[in-house]
Amino acid sequence: MKKAILAIAATGMLFGLFGCNNSEMATLKPTHSAELTPMQQSWRGVIPCADCEGIETSLFLDKDGTWVMNEHYQGVSREPSSFGSYGTWARTADKLVLTDSHGEKSFYRAKGDKLEMLDREGNPIESKLNYTLEPVKADLPTTPMAMRGMYFYMADAATFTDCTTGKRVAVANNAQLERDYAAAQGSDSKPVLLVVEGHFTLEPNPDTGVMVKTLAASKEAKFVPGKDCLSK
Image (cartoon, rainbow, N blue to C red; front, side):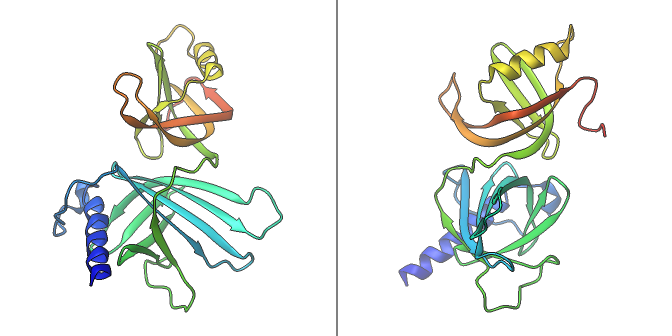
């Protein structure tokens, strides 16, 4: 009975998180739940793989409507064997819909306190293999991901407005990025398009100490003056 109660509670939390997202889903019956803490929820599992031992999959949902996923291909000799992706999430009546930075969609559904992967059309996978992710507490993955966004630096603080999600995040201290931005912006104090490989982390706000999502950029970074997120 205790396990059943926990499973029901976890499912309520999951779909309560879903309910925080886009107003386009407002016609659905709302889910009432307590405010979520911590801000982020995460799941992990090993998904079946046709040409490897399994894909260790970690999924992180943020209540701002964004997600990050890390997939590690087990038992392979090639590198890289880990791949990161991110994008936005939304829900239908019974599904979690992930849209990545390329516009590709993937689907999951709540199954007790777990998430079950669905097929490319959003239907259950007919298989005896395990396609579920278990709830875990874990840090955001550090696998680099290709990103594009508008970088802005002022008053000793940098921000990055991501082209895929439209979300603005802080940028970890990076002296090289600051110098390159200064050269790219010239005499204009305005955002400049940044193409970068990086990952998200949670860092304390220097003023309030509150943990905030932060972009940690790798050395693969390039400013593109005169362009924006709509430029090709």
